[in-house]
Image 1 (cartoon, one colour):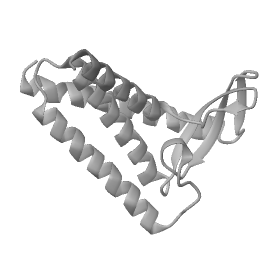
Image 2 (cartoon, one colour):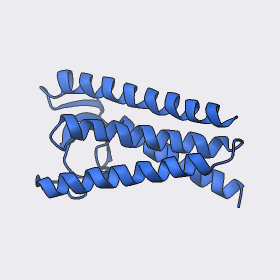
Image 3 (cartoon, one colour):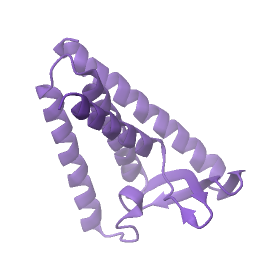
Image 4 (cartoon, helix red, strand yellow):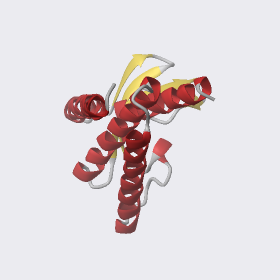
Length: 160
């Protein structure tokens, strides 16, 4: 993959993830928010409408200060700058690495779009639990970030 194709790939994958994430969140906001929760697999999986004002897994939630919003925006911009740096410096023949960066970029931007449109909050809706163990509610952008991280770890492991 040449340099131009590398950037096109990143744009298509990240853009597709952002678009899918935002369309799903729009549907969740319109149809799930009024009811709050729908049990899909009792005892294991619900669709639950949550406005997460924190970061990963709800950390720093509850604070609505302007400073918190500025810090989150600065962290997102720093992360994207690092991603652009890695894309620019990556070889043209590193598909796992590029797919990983694409997913992380799309997920990070998808959640950042939410923060801009929702006064600093991100819409989460995928709610998994088993007995008393309850995983934090998450969304498609979070899945993209997690998948991207896993692909980069796999790339690093294969090329150690």
